[in-house]
Length: 257
Image (cartoon, rainbow, N blue to C red; front, side, top):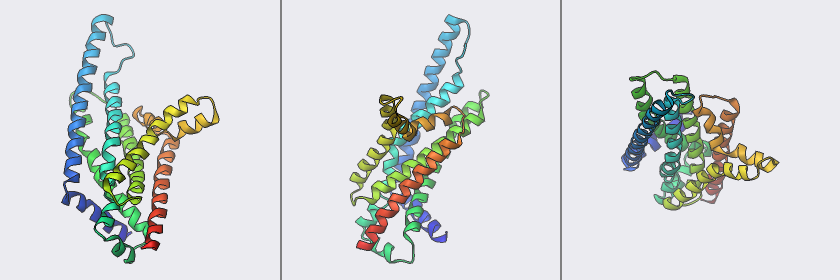
């Protein structure tokens, strides 16, 4: 466990020694701030129109719409940002010719893979914490459902873990960071669009399987305030699978080096 934590700390420091962490945090927070402002403005305008023409809000819940759209937008932004966090995890070791030193040290492949994943996950957790001003800001002016908010953030944490695990796999497959980012984006986009493929083959076993593999279908339950063990099991399973395949790739490279 000590080796894993040491590697995680090393990865986390390397993010802040380079411009990557600062650029990713700035872009992520700036985009989320702009999107949140636009959502609030659009929902406020829609609420005013419904009050004016219908005399009431009916089934329309502005706070629920704001949070669900904010969480949905955050996943889209993460789809583009996460490859930037994982593209250097293993490619940097190959580029700096330090992979041989790492492989010959008294550290297991599991500790290397999980330590690097944990370092990236800690940076991602910081990103989520910095966006917590959104519900805090809303709570200062109106009453909100903290259960739904925390459920949404749990979904974001699990989805981010899946993104990082498969991004780690992409990084282990190549020595070029740009190629790693492209492969990672391809993996993540596949987890996104597989749900649409499931709709094409609806009411068939293939369609059911594809719909289950869709990350978005599981994430939507979290944004509704629903915490289902099957959704958690899916995310944990995808993380374990991504890290397992990464382990196999790194282990094969270790024997070749």
